[in-house]
Structure formats: C-alpha cells, structure tokens
Image (tube, rainbow, N blue to C red; front, side, top):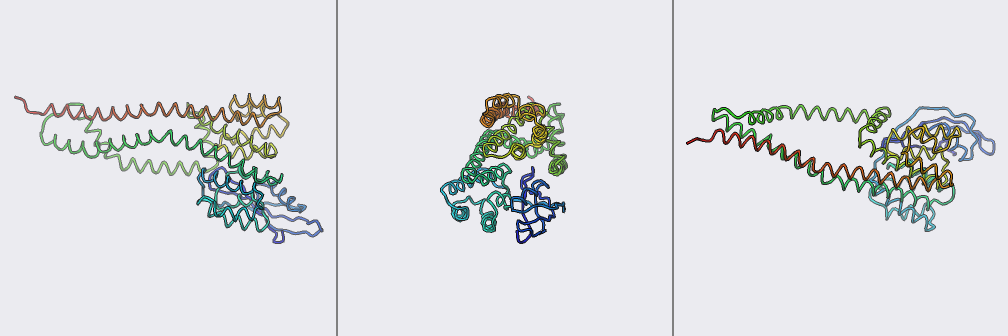
Length: 414
C-alpha cells in the first residue's frame, strides 16, 4: 500500500470487457498514519472491503469516474484445462509463485498472454483471484468468486479445481450443442449454395435461350424466371441491408439496456425461450451451488451466479431476488417471486432449505434444467433437419418442373 493504490476489477456481462469504478480514498494505517490514493472496484462497498483487507481503516471514499478495459476471450475448453492444471499444481502443495512458473510450461496457448501479468501480480503481493481478475484474458466472474473464497479459507487448490470442474461442464454443454448443430448448418450452407447456383447461373442462361425462341412461356416458368430476376436485383442491396441491420443489432445488444431487452424478448419466444431459460437457470444454479459450497456469502454468490448465467434477463431476476433475500426472505420464496429459476429448481430448493442441503439441491436442479434444455435443443434440431431438406427440395423441384414445362412447351411438333 506504499504506492497508495489498490486494483480491484469486476467482469461485466459483456464478454471481454472489464468495468472498473475508480475511487479516491483516505485511510489510516495501523500505526495511525493517514494515506490517500486511488483504487478500482465495482462499487463503494467492495472498495471499503478491499481497504479493510489491506489493513487500512477507511476515512473517506469518493467516486472518481469509471474506466473500461477489454480482455481477450479464451475458449471455455482452454480455460477449463488451464484451471485444472493450475489447481493440480496448487493441490500438490506448491506455493502460488512456483505453481505459476510450472504452469508456464503446461498452460494452453490461449493462457500465455496472461502469464507474465499473473506472475507480476503475485510477486507484488496480490492474490490469485485478483491477478486473474485483472489479467489480459477474460476470466468468468464465477471463477473469480470461487478462487477468492478458496484463498480466504486457505484452500486455493481445491477451489481452483472446483472452478475447473464448472468450466469443464460448460465446455461439455457447448460442445454437445455445436455437435448437434453441425449437420443442419452444413445442410443449410449446401442448400443455399445450390439455390444460388440455380438463381444466379442456370436460370439466367435458360432465360436467354428461351428469349431467343420468341414463344409464349408457361405461367410457372414466367413466375420462376421473374423471381430469379428479382432475387438477383435485390441480392446486393439486400445483403447490404442485412449487414447494416446486423451491425446495428450488435451495437444495440452491446449496451446494458439493449442486451436486457433482447434477452427478455428471447424468453417470450416459444421453444427458444424455454430452452434459454432452462440453460441459464442451470448455469446460475450450478454456479450458486459451487459458490455456496466454497463459502461465498449468499448475496455475493448471487451476484457472481447472475453473471455466469450468460443471460441479462436471468441476471436481473437474480438481482431482484437478492434484494428480497437481504430483507430476510428465503431463497426459494425470493426466486419464485422474481421468476429467476424454473419451477422445478424452486421446488427442489425449497426441499433443500427444509433438509439443510441447499447447495446439493441446487446442483441437482442444475442437472435437471440442463437435461431439459438439451432435450428441447435436440428435438428442435431433429425437426430442423427434415424441414431444411423439404424446403430446399421443394425449391429445386419447383425450379426443375418450371424449366421442364418450358422445354416441353417449345419443342418442335410433328
């Protein structure tokens, strides 16, 4: 603290961005000397706690603005692997400095930009959680919370291992979803490419050939040729409009209010909303279970769990629930009132409160919600595949039938 600065950050909901509120402070040391400086924290309460943890008695804490730093995203699988290796090194009894030096030889490539920063922060006396929080790579808030709890209890190794298990579960879920969508994506690309060749190459050539014959074409052929001509004319402006709309949408959902409204709208879409709600509830419940087991206070655990849900609507509902819980309401009652978790999760949580197994029931609810989300996704994918095949086959059949009808209408007669 001799330099009069403390660094504390918090990861916002948007991946790759770290928002730090800057505070000016005056605080007294144990020997009575008053020092002043600046520190970075999510809010004044976190700033006060960090000063107390550093052995200072806060006198004044005033806001001095905010800064936003961008961090590089890390694949979930690499993040899980790195945490697993680092947790094993710490559980083997290595001090954090030696563990980081050994980790440098074992870390996935995406971790390499963060290693110098982690080692420097540890040498300067920061904990692993704070070093991860301010690193050049984006580490999920739930990992930071679990690591903080582990360091506070003197068991950083097991805490990092639990964070790795949580990330491994997230990586497995993402891999399963990507695998399920691979075939429909290939089918869609192949179908669009085939129709593009028909509209952009085959039909214009055929139209030129038929025009040279100066004969009346059948209605179906005229409709197909007209549709082909219109599609070619609208291709460039339509593509530009789509790109513009996408950029505008990205900018809108990049704001906190836009992201919240978009996620709220998705929750109201049939099937999609149910799958998203189950998936985000699963992530939030599992994160909350791990955080509570790690010793994080429930209000702070809810904040971390909300960010790990990956859904602004879910995060908002968990924030509302945390206000009720702080006022003395039970977890299950607060979640039910705010519609944060699924009814199944709320019912299991109520049973956990009565039996004293809250974290265990939350973990079980997370598994059930994840299975429900996967079932919905798999059912939708299974229905999507024949729908794509039927749609593209119908378009090709329509074009082929129209062209054959034109051929037969203009062939010479005996």
